[in-house]
Length: 162
Image 1 (cartoon, rainbow, N blue to C red):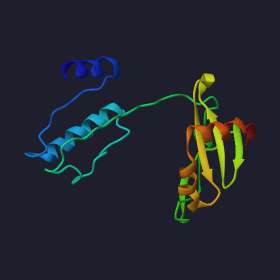
Image 2: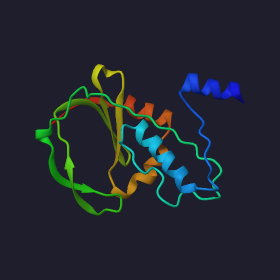
Image 3: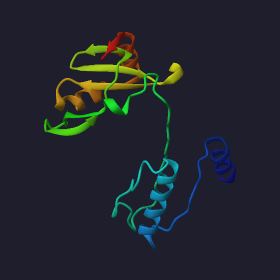
Image 4: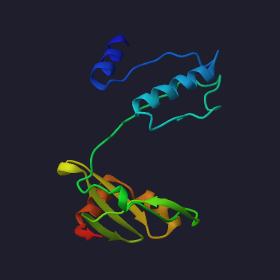
């Protein structure tokens, strides 16, 4: 066991923190949330709401990735405007919508669209999948696989968005 813990610490920066769920589950929950908050530069707070860690809890496995990169075509704050956003249940709400003129990979599939937005140096990109029907997300999620995403991106053509 000590070799495994050393390996996970040195190669994966993973640690093991022993906590007492039985004697004080709330303290354990707060410790976990503090760790997540620190690892995500305070972007994720209260990952585990009150009551989610109980005296019956025996293990909590948590991972956090903090990713920060600039867009190849940065968004201008001046172009961010209020607009209508449709939730999964079809309800419309007002939200801050980012706007930009950019060139990005785009394809239309059966029931949804795919947008491939590159980060600077094009080493990585964000792939957005938008169902045409607001309630269509579960159907699209069932199709998500590495093979399908590659196929959708293979059909994408560079499109200029304004």
